[in-house]
Structure formats: structure tokens, C-alpha cells
Length: 394
Image (cartoon, rainbow, N blue to C red):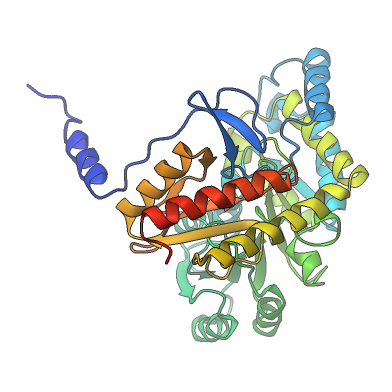
């Protein structure tokens, strides 16, 4: 008799045949602009480590010293016995970083999004969400049991129409968008969306996972980039991308934060972040303040690499950030593109359905502040060779 889960083997075979099966590579050492994966040294264009902080000596030292002083773990959830002064310090620092009254740390950006949306809305409410919003927003919307309406990507007029259509006396409405879209690298029209939310008296929420540390003065995010401080009710972010460590956060008014401390299920039912993680995040904020040249290098590297890809003739969509997709379309071709690039010493993973729509498969590249001009020109050479080999370039 077979195993009750044997049917999954057949499903995996179908994924493989369709070019949709993922084969994660393994990092053999610290991450960086160049790193070793599966025993091969490559130029790393796969990481969210925008500012190069994940292996910064100051970060490593802060994590090690915190572990020695505070221990390896906290032993409890925040609301019972797991809250340390480090957690409170990080939240105060992040609130200041985001120009918000208060902030709350979650175990991940995913749980910050999903837990917050589910906590503030119910079945009688409505969520108006960008079509390309992150999976954590989608899951949070489903968990809330609110009515969900989807507006066309970056279309503020469509969002406005949906808010008008779904308005009811006593009904709460949430307008929610990514600040930077993780698979396309384009930026939400936050200024326009804020005006829509204000006109319709809706709650405005932005997921700034890929914008925090990247956009705005000092990396403050899309709210700063568009100059709409005080007009966005909820800012979501992650500590695992530009900050270089792990975790997520919510920034907003004090009463929102206190509500999430009482009704945010991921916060209530997950052990708090270990001291090493929290201390490294605090140190990251210090480094961002002390080394502004990192953000400058990130954007100069971004410009160089984008210009190179455009010059070769690749389709990079509407990206306006360090996330630059190279869209090849068909899934099997994209898997081959990623594999051949790795053979040529460049790690840029394939992104396929369901992460992106069918027929819009791509390899996603992300440059960092730590890439050198030589790194990027070498990577462009590999893209040119492989692109011609696969018939993606003329």
C-alpha cells in the first residue's frame, strides 16, 4: 500500500515538466556581492541585501556581543515573559526612522502584513488591494474575512472607483499597496493613492519591505520619497532586506500599536526575536546613519546595471529601483537562462508561476551597494553571452 501523500510525487513531476519546480541553491558561507553557492563562487544578484549590511563587521560584532550578554533566545512570547529592553529600543529607533509615532516588531515582514490586516478588519469591511501586492497582504486579507476588491496595478483611479462602489455606512475600508513591487521593481503611485484614501476616508496602508533603506532620504521609504508623512496610517516593513537581518515591523499611531499588541496573532503567539537579531538590527540603523555613501553606491550601481541591460536589449519592465527583472516569458526558457547564467558565474534565480503570471517568467536581479563596477560589467557580459545563446537577444 502506498503512502497517503504519494499523489504529491505526481504533482511534483508536473511542476518539473512545466518548468515550475524550484531547486533552491545552498549558500556555503556569508552572503555578499560575491558569494559561494553549491560550491561555486559567483556574482550574487539574488540577495535582498541592498546596503551590504548582512555581513558587515559591526553587525556581526553587535550580534555576538548581544548573544553573550542576553543569551541565545528569550524563552517566551513578548506578552508573557519574552520582552527585553532591546525590543523596546529597536521599536523606538524604527519609529524615528520611519517618522512615525510608534512601531512594533514582528517575527517577519510576512507576519507583520498578514497579522495586521487580519487584526484591524472584519467580515463587514472591505479591502482594496493592488493586483500585484505581496502574498502576505493577500493572505492577511483572506484571514480578515473582509470583502476583497482588486484594483489594476498602480491604477489610482480604479482604486478610487472601487472605494466609491463598496462604501457603506459604518463600513471600514482599507486601501493597501506595496511601496516597491518585489518582482517588477516598480514604485507605487503613493501620492495619488493617499489622495484617494483621504477623499474616501479610507485607511491607507503601505508595505515598504523593498523601500525601507532604499527610497527616500536616508532610506526612510516611499512615504518620505513622496513627501506624504503623516498621511499614511500604517507602514509595514521588514528587517531582512536592506537592514540585513530578520523580522518585520509596523509603524503607525500609538493606538494601532497597542491594538496589535493585544490582537495581532503572530505577535501574541510567537516567541520574540532573539537578542542577537535585535541588536544587529539596531546596529544597522546606526550604520545607515553613519555611512550614507552606501545608499549612494546602491543607486549608482543600479543605474550602471540597468543601462547595461537596456543597451543589450533585454526587457526589464517598468523597474525604477535596484530590483531589475530580466523578463524572458516562457518558464522552461527562464529556468535554462538562470542555470546557464550560474554556469557563467552569475547567480540570478528564475522566478516563475505562481510568483509571477504565466508567460511573464523572469530572472530577478538585485544589485547592492557592495557590488563593484567590475562585478556588474562581468555580470553583463554573462547576460550577453547567454542571452544570445538562447535567442533572447538579436
